[in-house]
Image (cartoon, rainbow, N blue to C red):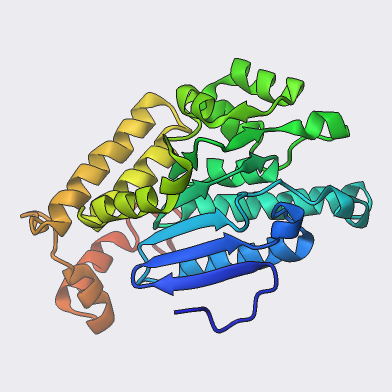
Length: 287
């Protein structure tokens, strides 16, 4: 079902549990104009708000994924403060994409450079054609990436390779992205859609709650120390047990605390009478 809103520079469709976003400026290699970026952010938020959608696939029209930010429009961004505001807006867009409680797939054909590459790094899976090319050429425009080209990339492939990609500005083949751990899989040029559909079929067979937990746990765990990350793993194990039916813990109150608050039951009265003034030092003293 096509979205009822009119988008000028993207195509947004829902097919059952899958949302599809197509970056649709083929005449400009799908470069991210300000208008397209606004529409893309809006579509991502629509996916975020849905509880029926389980997957999101992002692709590009006209045999290319995305050539990055539209350099010709950058003079319209404004002064240094306005440039920073736009960079933060794009960071918010990438962060929302990365944190969706859906599985996201970037289907990459042709060029995925600059902001286009940054989109792929915010997705869970990246499937690319053999002819796909990627890189961060901002250095030769005299600018730096704003929403993942140094930050997410360093977390995915390490600081040394991130320096090479950004400071040299070369364009690389798809297989090197897989070798570096930047993308997942390279397929023949005519097999991109079929491989994405095959991936979706496999993912659809899984426990969807488990997939949501995996995504949250891995994304958050990689940003913290080992012991904190292990805490996510432990709580995820408990949540898995609970949603699989083993939710009743003998010394939990089975939700009666919430019921007690709503109905002001004897349980609520008992707990609050014990706790309300416990170790409260500003109680009125005896007269």
